[in-house]
Image (cartoon, rainbow, N blue to C red; front, top):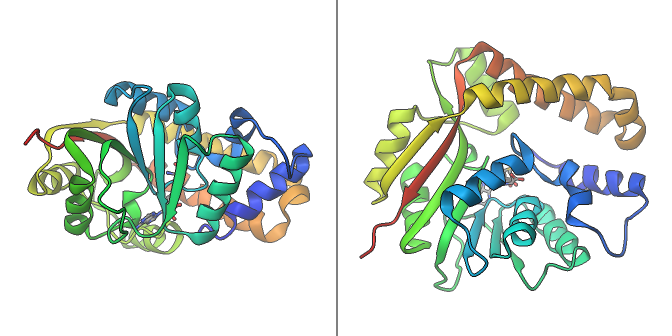
Length: 267
Ligand SMILES: C[S@@+](CC[C@H](N)C(=O)[O-])C[C@H]1O[C@@H](n2cnc3c(N)ncnc32)[C@H](O)[C@@H]1O
């Protein structure tokens, strides 16, 4: 999945008339944030974690680098992104060069559960809309624990299971969202604690995400003729289906949105 995301950004940049040369972080925000509530979610993460200009932040599943660039510009922190998808990671590096933020923001391509980060550890990590793709929570959370300095904190925005999914919903999650597994709130917290995390905070933000997901699907349909002109049939069909599936899942109420904070204890 996500094959279309880099092409979609390139099409939008062409439409803005700025394929090469300098770019501003704010020009990219309408299409480089792949999670509910765009930069509002990042301000929430920065405030909850207490990110400072000197902070070293790991962005797990960094996509095309939108969240990393926004945090670096807004909070003057240093951000390292890890992204599985090679094309998205390449785009993240190029867009960051074009926004002149490469001294503050760097990226590694690879799987967060196995990548060698040469012993680096971080004050904070964020994982925005990523863990739904990684079913082996034991390996994932142990790795995330190791990547924090003692006393450091992690911040997750993710889907979770509020009520039992139907067979059709399970199929949609797996096939359209590449999400083969979603834990309940309690399971999430038990698994984080089992990997050593303490000071766990879980906030159910479904009431914020549900209207946002529904509105996103509606707006995409309303602007379909514009999107067809800019992106062509194949991308528009894929994105439209993706947005509709998520909106329907949120409308039915079995899926929820979570903001979770956790800490590695001081040794
Ligand atoms: C919904 S996107 C969110 C991207 C970014 N966090 C954002 O909010 O714009 C999820 C991203 O996680 C990446 N991802 C999935 N599994 C991963 C893994 N095991 N290691 C690193 N990245 C992963 C995907 O390739 C994708 O770019």
